[in-house]
Image 1 (tube, one colour):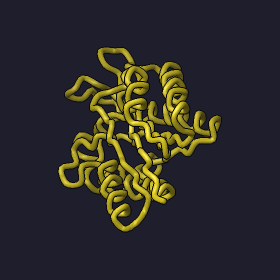
Image 2 (cartoon, one colour):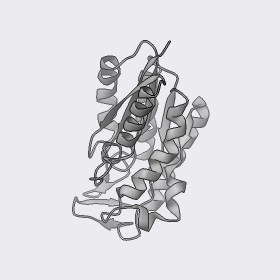
Image 3 (cartoon, rainbow, N blue to C red):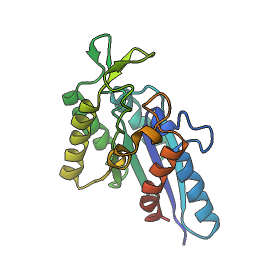
Image 4 (tube, rainbow, N blue to C red):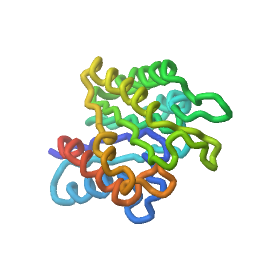
Amino acid sequence: MKKMIYGLFFGDSITYGEYDGVFGGWVDILKRYALQKFHEGSNEVIIYNLGIGGETTEGLIKRIPHELKARNSSEGNIVFLAYEANDLAIKEGKQMVRPEQFKVNIEKAIQHAKQFTNDIYLVSILPFSKNVDGVVVASGKLRTNAEVLIYNTILQDIAIENTFIYIDFYTAFLEDKEILLSQDGVHPNEKGYGIMAEIAIPIIEKYL
């Protein structure tokens, strides 16, 4: 008998798929893949893209209890947490969410998610282009690749502590980041989003 499983992807504009006018981003690629597999006879994995542009983990912990309650399948849930790009940004001389608070927020989100599933995935942030590394951009935000390493390490440590899978998009982008990122140097382009989807598809396949 087929199962109906919900996949909830929490994140910011990179989860939402900003700057990808072709495929709609990595989560939407996964959504179409899961739907195709369902039509071929697999379990039904319904993917919810819950990415909000500009959101930090402060916003996540406010909405995650409500989102989880509203989208809960009795047959199984998968939760993905994909943050950092805004948390680590410095705006008007102040870091939006400092590393220690970022850790607390992710752990709070995990506690909420554990009420619905043990299948929780932590997603790395990507490296930034050299053109925006340490540069104040039009949005007023300053980001550095040094901070990316700090925040990714926090996620990796939390994943180890909880025996979760850490999805390492960072390493996949590092060598070719200048051709996988869009002109803004933060968001992937169509090719970059495609690589992210390729890395994540084997995870989705476990539930199909």
